[in-house]
Length: 259
Length: 313
Image (tube, rainbow over all chains, first blue to last red; front, side, top):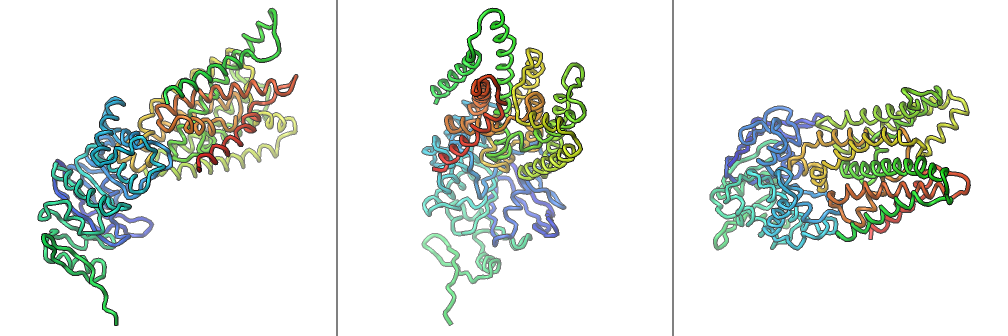
């Protein structure tokens, strides 16, 4: 179990402040959903945790070690990432892609392939094992990348809009899988746009939602708090309404009155 | 897939054997001499050069995630050209420790060109596209330098430089083979060890980084090793076009993108292709030899267009 901590983190590129003194802690075994308008700095924040972006000031601590000081293989054992866009120009097969994600393990090629098969089966993507990623659709490719993340067996998982490109049934499936990984003890930081999907993670009372606006923290609230609809409405500048379903509360935009 | 790989391997061996045997009928002691002292070492040089160029091409294409990347892209050839030109203008007949001055200067030029790019590539913040740009910048700068040297040189040196830039397998005997072999073997065998991290690059550099690949270190290592092998080849043979570009594409089409197959097979196919092209260059015009660079270029361009067109389907 490992925790991820951003301490007074700022990132400035070419005079533009992309992240503005962010302090945020994802405790070991916690699930935090990150939400915010486009360009708020959500993806950039994840990239600082992966040491893909170097902060201008402040620190990122992964399992109590400064992210920039972690050896690459060690970092990969602590933290894994599902990016929003998956490059696919090299015609590798699904199985080859997932086996390559086992880079951090010192093991034989056959062992990598067996682990890759298990990971693909877990995300329901066994059918793509022999197909080239260049021939897969966006959603299918997303699932191969999800299998890569699982095969890496890291303790902290970062997701960048994992429901992107997916049809409704697959979206539910992905969020259910997120819940499974979380209950296995992983710490999760997940960018998402539709808060209602979080119901499918389960344990709604333990989820946290963090809002990001213009590089800074806007709010940090429990998923089931009464104030969440108002926070989200303010964040996006729209009017939201909480609607009670038979078991869950949905947060939906109110239609603007015609006048 | 396995049987197909085996078939390709057997065809490569057959081509290599045929390259030694084709040619005018040879008999007696003179024939023995031509086969053992001229043809065999030349085929060996061709194997070393073709294999190295193709493998380095495959590695660089993976490293830069760019299907057009080759050793030419990172300043190796451009540096060698300036070095060779410099030597030809200075004095083409001079030797250093028994080696032609042209070869020595081309080798030094090739290494300096690629080291400039490699030093840039080792920066933590550099992305692959930045490194490619650095390669283009070095190529442009050296070609300006080359033009400057050409401007002050005489016509004899210019003719020699043009001849050199066509690329050909020289008659260097076993001594040339012995000088070339260790550098090529070192470069190729260490590059083959990078199969696993390079495979992780297939879904993008950033994802490979997150999976534990030390990207700047891998880039520096691959660039340094690749340039070393290619510098040795270019120093002896001049720039031989297209082998590094088309062979990896050809192998990828036939056998897929598993680098455990792609990298070693590029090595074999590159060796067989260059040796066959050279045999063809020896025979196509009776009584004369064409530089093999002309044959690979003439063959390479349409092959590349064909491969790209088929890939688009």
